[in-house]
Image 1: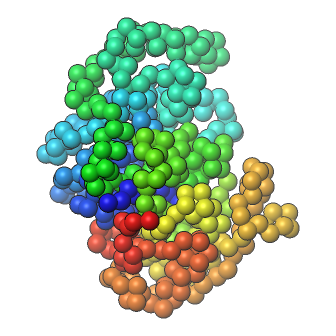
Image 2: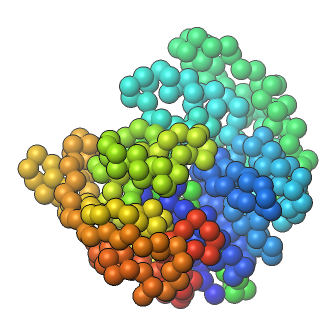
Image 3: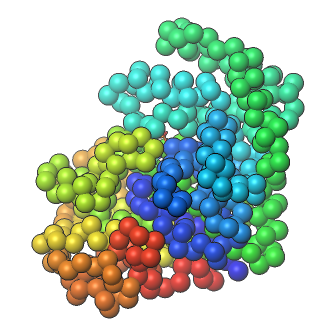
Length: 430
Ligand code: IMP
């Protein structure tokens, strides 16, 4: 049975949770392989809404083992807040597995995220302020604290001390903040040790054994292709590998074990935080997409920047991730728009770009070249077959499919779990 990867094909918030939900009971393991509590999805339990930021969405699917892979950065305070919140609602979370090699977001990483942004001024990234960047920086600098370190107190204290040397200089001398003591950090982290212990595992071994046994493993990417630290709109990116390759490095599973690579794209484009977005709309159309699509961040509540579908970036996402399928979400948000523009190419200083311009200045200067498609007015939320869609909606989807270089296998036509059109099965052998 397959290993499947889900990634965002744009700048995040494409509705990855919905695709995961769709696969639901067919999946034995859901693995978060990158990012931390900068992500966010809202789940509905009974009549209560609950926002999850760190836990993999599989935590709610009975019989599905949720896994936090080695590529994730874990804020232990948030982890246990979310676990406690779910326990209060009667959700059994005892199956959760956390990689012993996942890095911990130490309290000083949060402090540094916020002060650095403030000092960057107009160069700021617009981060979620959760300490993600500094935690990954420590990992790459070989100054990080890993989950496994909690179980060797002497080693833990030594590592914290090492990490704090340069940070305290920076905090005190550059940012005019107070120094952080080793004990306060160690005490905060050690307070979670006993509760964490039953969840800690060699998750690479667990997942490879599961795949050997024929189980289905879903690797759920946080953030998205255009926020990937290597392939996104650097430096306006997150600090992890949000593309399909990250599923392998972030979980310890080889690329030969992945069968489907599913990209999630909205029928239009959104972005939060700073950085270029060629199709961003500053007019009433942008407001309309934001209002109708409820485009406000789950993690920070920030209004999302909205624009028309950008096929240059989804073509790029198809290539970078080797997408086998696209799930096109929120098609219903476009209902009632007379003419729907789609960005097919960019123009930079009079030169046409079929592919993403490589240098930062060119991408920042890119002007979208639009082709417009006739819209539809019929309510499409009841459509369950592709042929149920009005002809104009079918033509829009087909055009987007061709321009994005990947087949569209599922279409979201409304916010409800069942409001989808399934064209091809998302779990398939290569
Ligand atoms: P960080 O991940 O907090 O360092 O933020 C870096 C950039 O990624 C900022 O522009 C954030 O708005 C963006 N970002 C991080 N997580 C998400 C997400 O889950 N959805 C959309 N944007 C995100």
